[in-house]
Length: 457
Image (cartoon, rainbow, N blue to C red; front, top):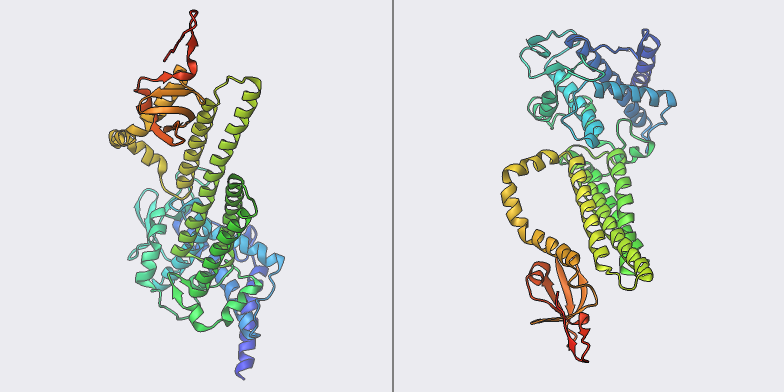
């Protein structure tokens, strides 16, 4: 008898979305009419969208439980299209501008489900009235629920849950609903603890058959989800190192390793968030880890390519002019590469949600301290440029400027390397070398009387 009632209940839950869809009015999908012109209509739209999404979740879970299956049932194209519409409607109900762009979909859905459970716990319904606080801002009396109008853009005038409201939802959820609440079906817990996003893929049913300890909560995710995330991270690092070891040349090996690491990091982020279903602070942490690996790999690629370009240009110019000083080419390509790497760092920090441009603008206040800290580095870079422009020395010249005597092997951004007569390598900062009296032995000239003289620029 119990099995019979479970079977009937499963059929009813599966049929409810379809029955609701058969009675939909014009201009709506499902039984939802999209209207955000007033706070009350916005609330009704939001509750209806999440209600219908919850029905889809429950139907999918009941179908798997009834047959005690290791796999979830297939999702039809019509159901997939409806889920995408529901997802868009739920996300459009909130001002997500306070969230990083790369986290808006997953974090927005988490916030929506938490907010829906908060509204249920507070007894809020589609008929609940709002109280106006000021122009463009309303609140539900006796709660912290706030909505406001969008002030600009194509959706100007639409009523949505404010950015401040969105930011406060997690703390309100802990205080009002509680993370330990297990009564009834929780769309938030289902979404965060089941792999695969809003509608789990077929294979995600396997996670429900795992031992209980693998489904324990750990940082808003299950132990099983964390294990998947860590294994993916280790796989990305191992594959990148393996690809790099294929090549013998160090530069080529590093370049191949960096390219592999960057590409795999992008793909791994999608797997961890969309497939493993990592959410909350766990999703933010792992996404930042993979973003760091991606942008770090890009920086390595830029620096290596810059060095290759410098070598290629130097080789070509030396073929056409044997007296051409290739050190200035290397210095120029290194400066360009460093500037490109700095641009990648700034873009990466900005993409992570840090207001980097505001920080840069704030350097105006602490600019003096930064300038003083960078003074030695800037002095060496400028001294290197002056040495090139002055033409007093170049790579291959032999100088005698005690105790710096030997043949110049390289003039870099910060320092100059000199090979001493005894074979030792002397490294001196460009600023120190520029301040010395340099005798360039390679530019010794022969006098008409048969003797010789030297000129030291």
